[in-house]
Image 1 (tube, helix red, strand yellow):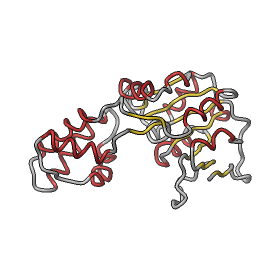
Image 2: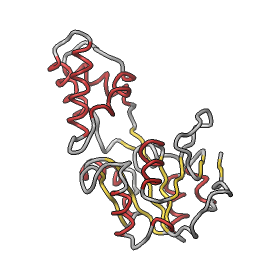
Image 3: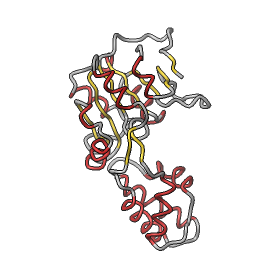
Length: 234
């Protein structure tokens, strides 16, 4: 599925810079979060206290300026344990085991990622804007064989504020000597990637788009897969 920008929108000029989100857009873990959570309960010696869906529902509530992913997860797991009448420290122990089990090198590129990047690199400068610590996210890029594809990488939440704040997008464009009117950001999250791109004045591309969801905010472009980016007309 692909859609071009709404012709009624007042669009800027041609695109010469493409920024990408990382997790869920270019790469995915070999093991699902549910599989890692099962391992974490076992390693911590704790009977399963909650399902992975509960983690997903609460996790964003525990993130904020200066809060690392590991700290947010530990607070989330502690709260989930307490909600179930258990010692919050059991939740924190599971969170520690989850972090140990979540091997950042066990990632793979999503289908079409390398081909899309190679095609876009012929005409555009490429960058990454990712929420996550430098060591973890760099490991993923290297493990997926994509580290050489980008001229700029911004670790939002560490180098700058986290997405959807406009700061990480602005930092990437500055490093690439580009500007919002010449750039598009590609990501899988409506709340972080699409909203953040709009806050910074960039066009947005939602990939992979979910045909069953009415997007809010609405992206400028929607593609069903990364492969469609090879022939994108911005």
